[in-house]
Image (cartoon, rainbow, N blue to C red; front, side, top):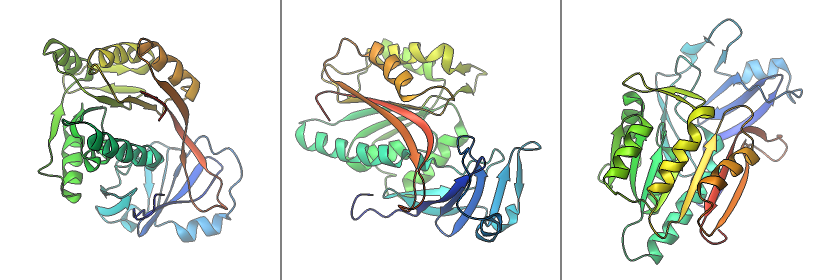
Length: 291
């Protein structure tokens, strides 16, 4: 963590296909398919620590959900989030992204200080707004897009928690490709693009998104929207088999005509130094220069 930024997330343990995590005042046990090792803590210690648990052994099912409030707030990487236990076991935040949020905030802040005009960023498949808020806190103007009206509302609530309700953020509920093609026709340009495409998604108009079918076209459209002197493209994914190298290769094809550098890696859930980090997806990041 960067000095001075509060963080209320901690990975406490993982193993046997599960993870034990603390989100502020509440600790939860949830599935984690990549945690194939043995946990450090005993089953009794997990049971004593967890306020609630979720599993998919017999459909999606919470255990002791009443041990959680309907909603609560946490701060992760200096960003405030409203959390709530959903029917699919999600909480409204993906803490494995916090290293990217720190990078975003610092990179955007430096770009805003160096460039004469506003820095404009497009965030696709934007979920509850972590990357949108990180970029906005860095000073950028952001276009936030998600196919779920409920998630866009959730992200706007998070913006209010971070006192960003008056910040220049466009809140869009739309199918990603429909919106991107419209932006291309309008000849709108962005200094950077962030995207975290789902393995499978469905839009408001019953449009479907399949990452193995649609990601190359998504990236092609994103390339068409980049300003002449773009800052970065940040791609992440949680799809099994989409390793850092896979993302690096597909991103490299999309921005192959641009000068810059691509770095890639695993996104990690982390805790104390004695707790093994747990992989949770991958990222690839193109930047102009060597950031």
